[in-house]
Amino acid sequence: MKGIIGTICGDIIGSPFEFNSIKTKDFELFGRRSIFTDDTVMTLAIANWLIKDKTSEEVLIKELQDFGNRYINAGYGRMFLNWIRQENPEPYGSWANGSAMRVSPCAWVADSLEEAQDLAYKSAVVTHNHPEGIKGALATVDAIYLARIGASKDEIKNHVETRYEYDLNRSVDEIRPHYSFDVSCAGSVPESIICFLEADDFEDTIRNCVSLGGDADTQAAIAGGIASAYWEVPGDIVDNSVNRLDDFLLNVLIRFEDKFI
Image (cartoon, rainbow, N blue to C red; front, side, top):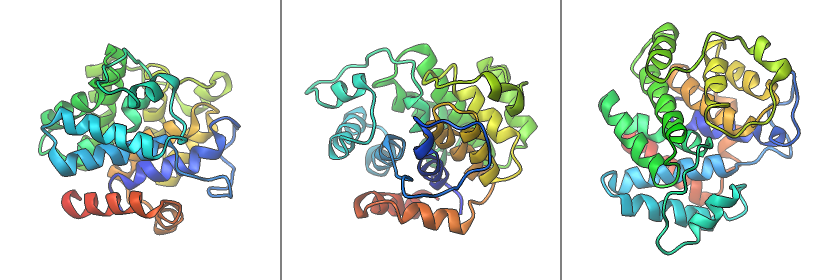
């Protein structure tokens, strides 16, 4: 299976390790503490916006607020929690990786790289209007879109390095020993992309992300979104993940897949 399911699987697999970091790829993929978090909720909020009206900022804001308030305990940052409660919310200059974690649906709706970038920009700027927040969303959507249309890893790497000036010439083994929890786009998106570039398959991508010992669920969601455009997500991983969604979120996922994937 391909599509935004990779973001959701990455989030759920990474969730037990967000605040209980590990530095190994040897861990149980699914356990009793494996749950969906804000990464899944916001990804499906973006998906629902694209289903309804991808041209409308008003619809986008409404979906982000509605999903956020429906799942108020999903693990949002303080500033986003304030944003979803406001009557007329304004962007708050965030440079955090929330813009990148939720962007994957934009790559599957777009008919061109330029459209993917436009949708990603719109999806980010209503909250994450800091240049680094926008850059993280754009770099992620570019990688997903290019993987979706059959680009090689080298082509994806060269594009992201050239356009966004991210350093992708490090290895997971080089990053891991000194890496720690980092919610910034600048300090987590390049590392997430490297986890995909170095992987052998979808599962290996997620294991790379978790093993860094950082913002595990979000980095696995970002890299998982790229990996699931490049490879098929194994059926057992899909099943274990969708079984952890409630009916509301599952129905959004199904509607998005039926319409776009």
